[in-house]
Image (cartoon, rainbow, N blue to C red; front, top):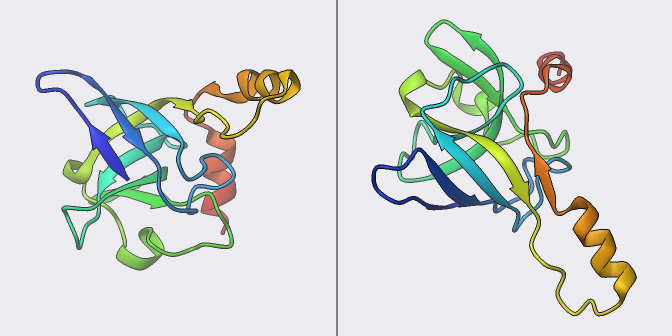
Length: 139
């Protein structure tokens, strides 16, 4: 994940890389993130990897546990790089919550239908999804 943040701002941009959040987020999606926002179960969050703190990752905050947050990816076929590997993530490593997802423009698409399809799905708010939280908790 690549992060762009101006000093002293509460919002920033992040770019998703990797398949761990499919189908919610795809490789190349951009996120508008809010730093210091209250994390709720089901929220998509940006955090520092507990074992490799120069690495930023995007996961879903499933539930609050003693010592921090239990986070998981949405992709059931890519169950690595989340709390099943590194346990509870300390609160201070959770940096931001995702507010909005923007899909990149389609490359090479010239038809009006392709542009309209992209326009209808390109910009989506990301809210805390308690149903996703309970579904992931059951995994």
